[in-house]
Length: 370
Ligand SMILES: C[S@@+](CC[C@H](N)C(=O)[O-])C[C@H]1O[C@@H](n2cnc3c(N)ncnc32)[C@H](O)[C@@H]1O
Ligand code: SF4
Image 1: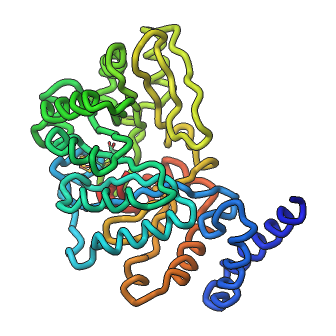
Image 2: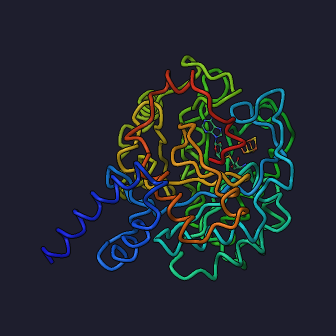
């Protein structure tokens, strides 16, 4: 065991230095990959220089959406990538297969609105066939959910996150710049009816818009198996983020504790993005995604592929590599792994902090995939 572990450490070190000169290291890299496969507890390609293992992949299925949420979609809209530059289902599945082979065991489909992609059910059904992929999750705005739920369940969706920022129909229209509140509520009810437990509800909290509704959202968890997750408002290109509009986790928690002093923490996994809580006796629970006030970069296990095929190793980093271009120029799986491993190896220890992020160039969220 000691021998295997020592050789793992030595080879990891070699791999790190190889990544600094990847152009010349192809041959040696391939050799080491073969050797490493036998000794590594987890793929060297998906392990970064801080030993974080990336076993969770988020794939954006589309840049389009049937809503226009203020915090996600710039008011002036976004320039859409020409269709021929987006990943086809086959390309996307080929990449998914490669990542799963290397140890990814959870894939989340997101967007844009993933459920408006016409071949979404085909993609899910194909992902379901991948040995080693334990969880298929979907993040959706819920607009098409009621109609699609039976097919989504049949195709193999394990987890659903439904975004809803208000329980007031008129405010829904203000936040999303579209009508649809009742459709989303219906989708949530249908998901519960179909046995999804918990149904996660993502709620971005913004001062002056919906911070007065956190208690109402938690009250919903009294009788429904919901996991309401309050997300701190994050800066992305074109969303006019400012610090004053961000409501911190601590502020939300203080407000909820005034109503429910016995609110108790729920223990979670190390890689969980949410800090979980529950009101004793309530059926559901709640959580806070504290990316701004208390980042969780140290345990990050997530990678992202954008709809146009770029690998993004950090939600808040602007460094990207086009897997699509390598794929289309005929790169072999081995070469792709080499590219992926180099990008993962360059992943920074943590994001730059909310004020720096708000000044940095990145994509609008709708073009990333949350
Ligand atoms: C980009 S959306 C894509 C999936 C789907 N259209 C939806 O709305 O659920 C994924 C998640 O990112 C969240 N999100 C978008 N922009 C955000 C921002 N600026 N800050 C925090 N969360 C954001 C959304 O609320 C949603 O829960
Ligand atoms: S958050 Fe989701 S629903 Fe809202 S604009 Fe972005 S992609 Fe569309």
